[in-house]
Length: 233
Image (cartoon, rainbow, N blue to C red):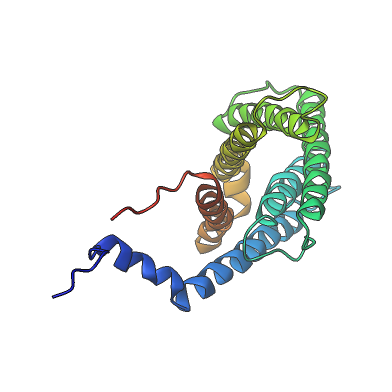
């Protein structure tokens, strides 16, 4: 009786699900859903705050465009399923990524400026809520993340010894910054101002919209950058 060189492994049997047609279809649907959720949330916030009615109204508008749209799309365009905002070449994706992330930083800085100006005019204290404290932490993490990305653009000039390791740190810190922004946005929905404007089942809908892209982004980065161990027999 011939002896098989490869022993049966239930883990290997489970991994065959990746070749099943349902798996890539679900992944593609999840990425499409993440794009739709990010865009829908940004549009809904734009309609809700009615920009121009007050100085503060520009703050949630700028921040939603910065983190919910630009930052999310800047990460999702690297997904294996593709993005409507990217080229096929990797250099094209990197170029669009930097355009979106630069726009995100400009919008975040503008949103912060409107918030500070609104507080100063109303003579209200700063950093009095969890949302504001988390917002400062998120802005700091995003700025450091952008600095890390600049190092990847000029590795020879800055004499970076290990570019792959820096790329791993860049992706990991980027995930952390995006999750912090999602937590900050979620905290904003618990403020008195937001709960007074949105009530009932609609409030839960708003709560779920930014969470779904965060799950897709987290899955994308962990699958792309976490080290994978080869199966041995």
